[in-house]
Image 1 (cartoon, helix red, strand yellow):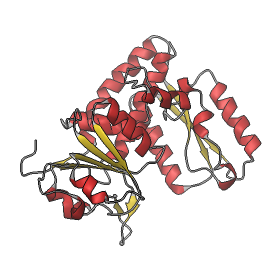
Image 2 (cartoon, rainbow, N blue to C red):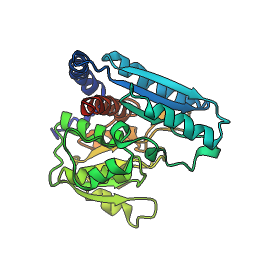
Image 3 (cartoon, rainbow, N blue to C red):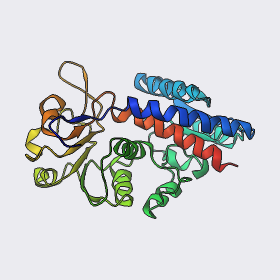
Image 4 (tube, helix red, strand yellow):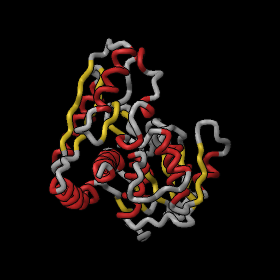
Length: 290
């Protein structure tokens, strides 16, 4: 698949293909008396968060799951917040829940992953679920962080081999970079995790078969970071605005798309895969509850 025409690794066909599988799994659970249900905790009026949570709700309902967005005021005290989350988590009717980030300043120090028990942690950030990643847990029942999980699904769909490949992950966040590195290792890739302090970053990226970039810097990855083989794959996790206010990724898409074997667009690449993974995790959590 590394001819002259680069593969545009769009998420739409993957999501489309997965929807029927999600629907039949959801129906099977309903037949057993379980309606997969998710609660999303949204604090305040962050416009991006409102859009994200709405998109997640819409997607869950597409295949028959239920999703409730619980909106809390932005001036909530820490005590009130913790007691609200506890009540939502303890509610037996829901199988998965998560807190939409970012939180307002007075709550931003809270490790929300630890507020959700591992069995309902559809985001995959509870320490117990991260520990599964450390152990190399790839079993069906594991709840894996959504963006890394979605990237693996995307690679599988487009036939991108991970076994034995050199993968450079740029970024070391707890949401993408670190769990991504672990998950790639579990899939037998050889992983180099780079970041803003990495020396000679271009030497690392030029030696890579696959580059996953998640640093939140518009058009950072330019052609100078690539080798001349045209056989590299770029997975762009960035969501930024360019100089014209248009949505763009961490890769300089227009100027590198012809120089690689495959690349994810922004928008329409990794973003929807994250929501797909969330849906898969919800069904998994509901199944585990049996």
